[in-house]
Amino acid sequence: MSENALAAPLVLHLADDDATRQLGEDMVLLLRQGDVVALSGDLGAGKSTLARAMIQAHANAPGLDVPSPTYTLVQTYDTAPPIAHFDLYRLSEESELDELGFDEAAEAGIVLCEWPERAPAVFLASSLRVGLSIDGEGRRAEISGTPQALSRLRRTLAIRAFLDADTQPVCQRRRFFGDASPRRYESVLRGGAPALLMDAPRQTQGLPVEGGLPYARIAHIAEDVAPFVAVARALRAEGFAAPEVFAADLDQGFVLIEHLGEGTVLDAAGRPIPERYEAAALMLAELHARGWDAVLPVAGDTVHAVPDFDRRAMAIEVGLLLDWYFPRMRGAKATDAERSEYVAVWGDLFDTLREAETSLVLRDLHSPNIVWREDRAGLDRIGLVDFQDAMIGPAAYDLASLAQDARVDVAPELEMRLVAAYAAARRAQGSFDAYAFERDYAIMAAQRASKILGIFVRLDERDGKPQYLRHIPRLKDYLARTLDHPALAALKTLYSRWGLIGDAPGAR
Picture 1 (spheres, rainbow, N blue to C red):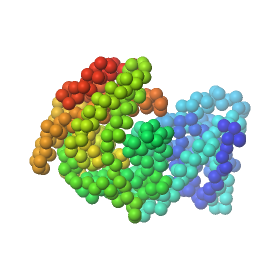
Picture 2 (cartoon, rainbow, N blue to C red):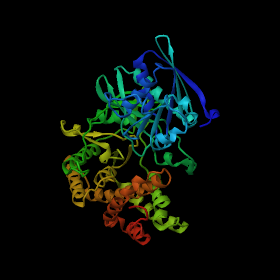
Picture 3 (spheres, helix red, strand yellow):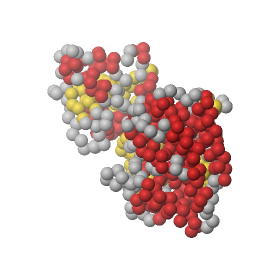
Picture 4 (spheres, rainbow, N blue to C red):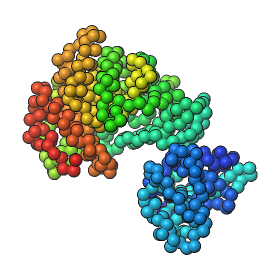
């Protein structure tokens, strides 16, 4: 980066070594592949202390031996992404950077570089420059960098301030897991117990696509963390195992929540454990039998109006198949006539859903979002996460999400077992139209599969995430089996004529 690309520096006072180490822990959470951090300062200013804390936190190994690379000049760590620690104090000339593999390290992962003054190219490549100096009993850190990197730094420091304001001491911030959403998670220790930090800044909704509204607004995708907080508290009030919300900053998009555990509904080979999936189906039967308020409290006077999973939302979701998956399959965009036919077929199916039983639907109840709690019983065994997009809509949608898990193979026999267990539980609770529910299930399963086929191609083509394409064959198999239901006869004819459930170029 060039000098004139730098934003105004951020100046911090670090009271002691612990504060320096905490800054390293906070900083490394914002770093991404390709980031270079230049660490400047006199001997004893704290460069190695800061670098060591960053490496140990990134490796999630507080006791990791992090020797100073004063003599080796570089030390690498096999983390994700990899991190390389350079010390250029003994560098003879800048050309030696090539021999040390500086450019390769910066391209493949994160680079921390002490004594960057010895090689001006490091400054040019840096996204952050940290200048450390002695300041009384502590240190002064002056941090400059690109506007993007400094923006990330300010956010991680804002998270630190949020955590420090909690009623319990919060420490040991670590990367947690990622998904296809813009949300980010960290694991922390709160009062010595595991907890999670959700970092979900308010989303910009994009350009209008229909009726002056952006896609996210029509599809009722959560814009901030208020829906998560509201639904979590509503679920807990009804006895479901949603995480407790310890603290929330609705404006900044920070939520500190209970860590429900590490258990999963999959075995060691990544296959569904039938008994656990069935327990989840029975939990859904209980959830869908309850009455749910459409307006839920969040905090103070703030409330969340749970949106309806209405016809417009369903339609724009299935439109993703036509916008993304169809061109991938056919090698050309849909014509106006093809689009009109598609809209008409789905319109008839949405008409059918007018009589569907509705409930609170969590929207993404599948293996990544279910925590199996072996030591619990009943509803408390099924930990629920990722429900901020919950709506009031056809109850069958949630069961289809579970029984046609987009990320693991659910055999037809297991799918039938789950539907049967759910139906039996609902019948035992009172009046339940199993025939209508089977029809609604088929429609919602087809709707969900059609939407996700479009999303996974979009993740590849627009967002550069080709890993989601590996799930497409599974989704096509689900769709093929679902289309045999009589209610989907017209949709089956259309998809078959278009060849949409055949092999997709680049999808395997």
